[in-house]
Each structure stands twice: as structure tokens, then as C-alpha cells.
Length: 277
Image 1: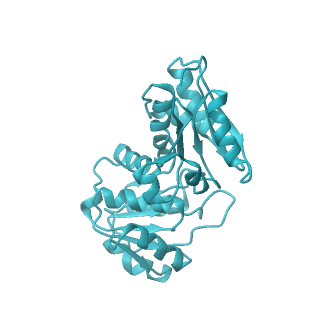
Image 2: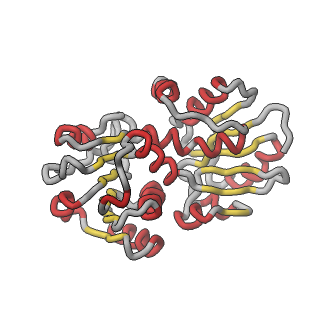
Image 3: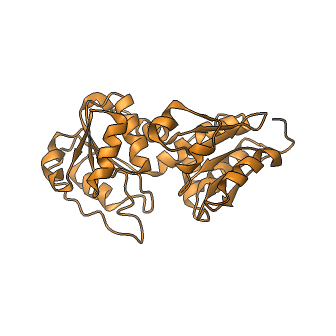
């Protein structure tokens, strides 16, 4: 698709809170690209019409955020294997003929964040415990398994949702009750919170990490605040910790490269630009 000014954006409802415009805006400025990345508030009812119209308006692609990540799969002309496995898409690319290509880069972003900020971590070092069973959990569990985690224990308030995740991703996923967390913690090589618990202004994540080994890597997808109570507890034990902002930054890199033709760098300058937005 040949366009004078390349366009991309993020679709959600609401979308005003999204850090993606600041993220991509930083890269556009940094690499001197005469393009734009805009927030687009779109309702469930209008999603199909908007997705079909965007390529005609010069858009090369869009990110998809809550609540459209699952619905958008049914609107795509082609779906990547990982998006199909996860059952959700966060990155849409429009072909030169306007075809809609859906992908999910959340798992890749999760792993890239860990590899950048905890370079000694290895997924195959032992089992992982994942709190939550929503869209982010599906991407993260899938990524951990593909990276070699021997087992991934999934804990969710609603057990049926965890079982649905296990049915999708296979027998190495073990669904356990929330009450079993203390007995599971000593054996984990990695602990991941994928829920919104602990987010600024929301419900707290009440979990006691006293049985956790100091060698266990702890990470949280929540990045407001950057240092959640979970990460603070883990740091006090001596565990390596990784905040959730890096996952947001790294999941954005494939889309930016596809749309604007430049592989972007995730560094401290980008983190500061997004945090100050």
C-alpha cells in the first residue's frame, strides 16, 4: 500500500488511557518518520465497519485493545498461528489490497521484557505460576510453554476459565485453586500476575509471598504503579523482579516495524516518554 503519510493507531473502548500513542509517537519522532499514530474509540457495533474502512483511509495497521481483542479475529482475512492459539489479536496489519491480517504479539512482548530485564532467567529452569486466566494469561502461558517451561500452574478465581485455558493450551497447564498458592510457591521458577489486581485505584492483590524462594523471578503485567505490592514483596525477599511496562513496549515493536518500515529500539528514553505521557 503506497501512502504519502503512513497512518496507524489503536482501537479500543475506552481508549483515552492508552499509552500506545505516546509510545509510537516517540518512535516516529526518533526515526524522523513523517507518519501518525492515533487513538480510535470504536464501539463493538462499529468495529467491523471501521476495520474495513481504515485501509481505504491510508491506515497501514492498528493495535487492538480491550474489549475488541477477541472479536477482531472473526473480522480478519488471515490469522497468525499464535493469535489463533491464544484466541485474541492485538496487532492488525492491512495488506496492499486491504486484507486484514491479525496477529498477537503479547507473548513475544512478555518474553522480550524478561530477557531484557532479567537476562539470566530461563523458562526451562522450572515451573511457572500464573495468576489469572484472561487474554493476557493466555498469551503469557502460551509463551512460557513455547519457551520450554515444564509446567505452568494457572490460578484463577473462576476455575472454569482456567480449565478452558488448559483445554486450549494442553496438559502442561495445571489448573489449581487460589488457596493452594502458598504450597506451590516454593517450587516455582517464575511467578506472573496477569490480573488487574494491584492496579492503581483498583482492588489489591492479597497474596503472601513468604514461602517464595529468593531465586524465583516475579513479574507483573500491571504497570500503574510500576512497583506493585507484589513486586515490592518479592524484592524484599531478594527475588529478581520485572515490572510490566516493558511488555507493553516490546509488544509494540512488530507492529511499528510492519507499518513504518523501521525496527524500533526499546530503551530508557522510550520508557521515560511513555511514563511521562
